[in-house]
Image 1 (tube, rainbow, N blue to C red):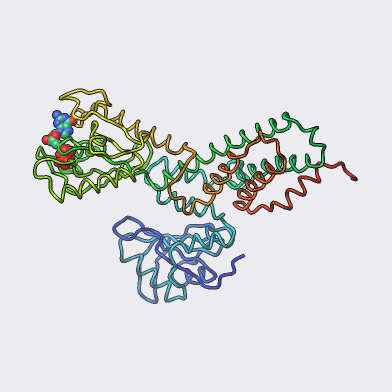
Image 2 (tube, rainbow, N blue to C red; image 1 turned 30 degrees about the horizontal axis):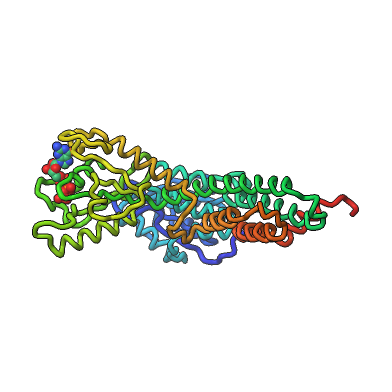
Length: 439
Ligand SMILES: Nc1nc2c(ncn2[C@@H]2O[C@H](COP(=O)(O)OP(=O)(O)OP(=O)(O)O)[C@@H](O)[C@H]2O)c(=O)[nH]1
Ligand SMILES: [Mg+2]
């Protein structure tokens, strides 16, 4: 099954202190290396307890696991040495595997081989990376869901897009077919029916796009910025959300000088929470440094997915933000209550509500059909949104089968390209299948 001749090796666990470390070896020499390195021979499907040796020197002792191609992670012969943790033991064993003919694996090379040997799809390899990098339970679950999906699963993104593609083909086919029919026979009813099909398709695409966008937010994390005047309690609120004394708090205005970032798990969403330096628009002794602070905070707020605004501050500073991403709060509500969401970092009143509101805004963000953020690397999402744009612009009221047909073809081609379907073949077979057998 494997067509790679070299055998690769790497320490599969993170370096540093730890109970156990794993050195993984994959390739045609894996078993030979294991036999040389271990006092007991590798047994496929069995765990062997052995000493790991190089010549007369004992390197460590531990467990040896063996997998025969193709029934392994990479699809090749694989052995794994479970040795003691720390830096010395795994490094010694790794060095020994290299002396015995393995070479150091590049980053991700085990997964690359798994992909090349057909053990996982490209999408699954991506999902695996997301799973490993996941910062919250929710993000991990989303990635795992994708990872364990069967190729044939109905919720596999490729199959979903393929289904959308088929639906555009079905509409196109009807339109092409209608060209051969007397126009006067078609009428409004024909186009109304197609319009309904198309609008159902748009709804289904929206749902799928929001699922993908949610996954992207779960993967990359959302940017949530605390914005307010000096001494308003921004750093205190950051600490309250994190439940730890991350930022310095004091009653001196201007305590936070640069922005402070911290990862937080907000109702399952991984969030990069940013505490900014309190800013004043102007005032006594307004300095260059403060002007720069205002500029930076404004920039951050514009980039943010959600802004937690302390009172009317953003408006007063002339920072224009999309209303949908601003959560206005009344801070220090234990001292004075206001008409925005009342929050107190001191008593924790409103902190949970605030978290839930942040989560709700992120959910909303994922469901929005417009998207002007960079979609690099999100090929499926990009295709879906492009096809959606084309479909949404079709005017069925024109009752013009040729024009509508052209637009449908564009939508089909965009979706088809994403999943490697061939428009002209499919449209032909779609068309001919409408004819009777024998015709
Ligand atoms: N009573 C009360 N005091 C608070 C609350 N939150 C913060 N404070 C106090 O307000 C003062 C300022 O708090 P910080 O969190 O440092 O304010 P900040 O907005 O980060 O200030 P800068 O970094 O200077 O912009 C401190 O003395 C806090 O103890 C609150 O909810 N209630
Ligand atoms: Mg502060």
